[in-house]
Amino acid sequence: MRQKYIKSGLKLLAIISLLSLGIFAQGGNRRNDLSERRWDLTEINGKRVYSSKAFLEIDASESRFSGNAGCNRMFGSVSVNRTNINFGGVGTTKMFCNDNGVMKLEADFTRALERVTRFERTGNNLSLYVRNRLVLKFKGTKTDDTDSALKLEDKKWVLESIKNRSLPRIETVPFINFDKVKRSAGGNTGCNVFGGSYSVTRDAIAITNIVSTMRACIEDERMNIEREFKNALENADRFEIVGRKLNLYRNKTLLLTFRAENK
Image (cartoon, rainbow, N blue to C red):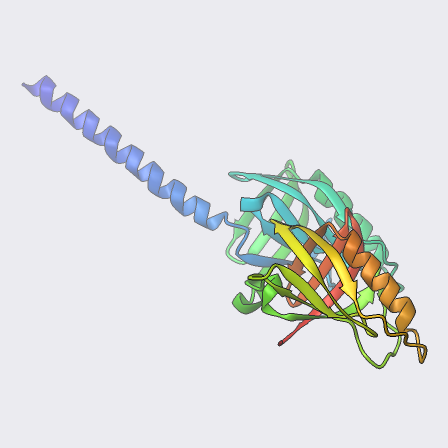
């Protein structure tokens, strides 16, 4: 009889232990969720970083990340397993920034990111390691729910730059709207009204069958902008929305950048 009670007690203890492990594992997963924050760079290779644009946004469920390397937009793949993390295919746009030290910081940041093997998160603080060596530290801030939930169809997207070149002063600034029900995309090239179709799969995009009116605008640079704008729309194969910005890419090349405005 005594042996029977001992066996029952051991079984109960084993069940309690397994349940406890499950609870702690769930808690650990919550603590290790990196997708709920924007991670602003605060330290690199032991040196404090001040007033930098560099940040990370990690979408572990989609195995991808995006952000800013300090000067250029960056993006790539990411894999997270418990406290192990690896960044792959790190790509950036190709803009040059004249600000003192920015390009060196960007090079150091992306180089370190490619070698990272694990992470530690404590509250709003994220540390990235190469094995046991701390290389990057970040401060987390909650993303604005309104901005983080933006979809293509939610806003009017007003053109800000073409291949990282700011637009010259023109009378009408190009824009584009997306209609999910009609699967149509259209707006203004800066000179002519245009329309077409679009399709989206995750972050892949195709804008096709673009037609426009045939007005000639000779007062300023609008015709050149129109040509580049339409070519970029037709060549775009990927998009990302970060904050209130929409970026259209061809592979890793940034083609167009828009800002969100109310329709």
